[in-house]
Length: 124
Image (cartoon, rainbow, N blue to C red; front, side, top):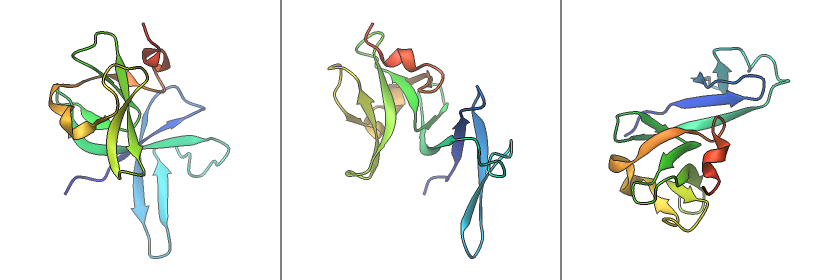
């Protein structure tokens, strides 16, 4: 079983922040290290750890941008597919189609994430 971890990206900040999840008998509580759970005026996006690592050993999270080794300058975004109940890569062109993340994690390379580098998803 994989480790359950999350990271968050907030609109008031320009960097990733790790968050912790605390469980109680009544409800789960997401608490960020920069206290976004207390101040509800900030929108945050929570991204789940996939349990996989790229070729460099870096943890892969939802929202990460993965470079395709076959198509230079093409990047896929790690997404959760609700219908298939799995993480996969969504390519924004015709490079590789939609691929299961587990089929490419060993040769993939993370080149940032959607929040830091949205232009990587544009075709070069």
